[in-house]
Length: 248
Image (cartoon, rainbow, N blue to C red; front, side):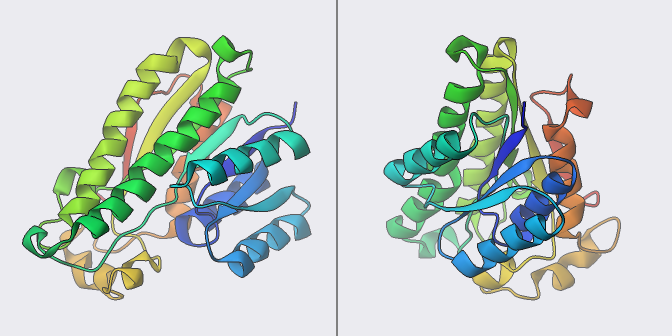
């Protein structure tokens, strides 16, 4: 049986690194993107050039209809999933909570939380033995912010990622007897362009002194943890919240 994994938000950063590494370890990879079609296609082409299997799928994970279409496309072309990486997420500009708007919060939770719940629901419907599936693995990409709180920067992002931690624990217990493992990684300061999208392109360099290892991490270092959790090497690991944060 072909091992098929969907990686959301896989056109850049941690998602792209995860897609590439998973393909190198034998997974057929569905590369999800929201807007960056060219970047997603570049990830797909790199996988294909290395002899792997991949396809790009556009979907805004906060939109239920788009998520359903994405999962149905995977079903049609490849068959049922064995892996899901809930990586798609956003931050916003640095602000105190008394400067934030409801529109910002809705976007933050729609993408980071509801998007992950939607994808997890559809994955469970395909993986769980309760639904006739053969089992599988879900890895949620949380953040060290869930335990640090990100004061005076983005408390709302930290709160959204704390919700992902809680979802990971609850879902792992819910489907553990149905052949589905659910874990999360919590990256710390990682060198990706998500910081620039939040208006802090130098954030990793500026805060590296707070990390016991005295440096920011690389996307590949997070991807290695994600792909291990996906794999059979982690067959007895579920409900784990794995910090990949250099000790911060």
